[in-house]
Image (cartoon, rainbow over all chains, first blue to last red; front, side, top):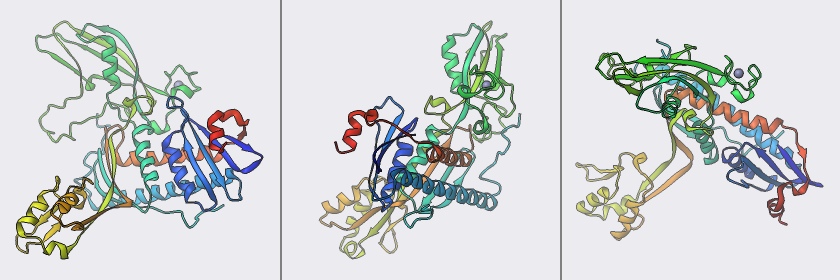
Length: 109
Length: 320
Ligand SMILES: [Zn+2]
């Protein structure tokens, strides 16, 4: 990650290599939920270059801190989905033991 | 710092249907950016293993060497190992050669037709050096288990005297680099529709009018109960957001007969796997990949760069 600042740490553009809409849009949405964020947007400078720029402007905290908090928040959410999903799949398998997942043997030969 | 801030949500999940290669589940209390990130990662960034290098020893078949190499690449291989495997490009055990046990799996294929009967060379003829990485077996998925016709995927057909002999290297990769590495046949999500019929307005319609309104929907969303003559929603999810019933109501001079909203925080996912990874594992792997991406951003050290690194775009983004 590269980070540009212009004296004022509240406004910054972050550049992510090898990333695209997948990460940038989720981050943008999450950052825009944060009341400490004045502006957040992202752009992909060129379609054949694997790069995305995320612009963050905040009320008073450093932009990079707010960005990292947003990552942390998304991380916790992913962790939560993962935990919930595992539980729900296990519950489904115990309730539907036979029919729905017939072959556990992918290494039968 | 702001962990668990008030705007942060904790989504709910419900499984509707689960098979090795098919999964339907609900994801609630979240937003489109998260649902879409999950979908995009499942299609393009969950790693699998696929044949990437082919050395042909003998090929006297009707298909040329590169045609066969391409077909081999597209054969799904069981890829439970992929998450813990190394990408050849950053494997230090073989210096990027991409042929060591940490980053590759070797396959051999030898077939020669000795009879007047056409010989089908299939994915079953591929001999793997690693028993956990083998061509996906579709035989029991298709239901005809007893028919002894446990065919693999046809690679080429040989007539008498023709021969195919080759060595292939399978490597870890992602769908973003080549579609052959995509573990997903399809991954889709839809917003859950919320359908409200205005009963008072519906009362004002004649039987024929109700019937023709119900039939104006291209998919079977509504039905008229033959006994009560009431129009009921039988399958809200069959609605494709086509607006036909709304237009029909307006054309009948009854605007507001039905109101349909998309619940923008509820998603119904359909995941179909190629067989390389089980559908439920595909979702789990996608979440892990997404977490790795977030971690990379969170833990990365910033390097302060000059203003002009972003050129005109940077100036534009700064309002310059
Ligand atoms: Zn290696």
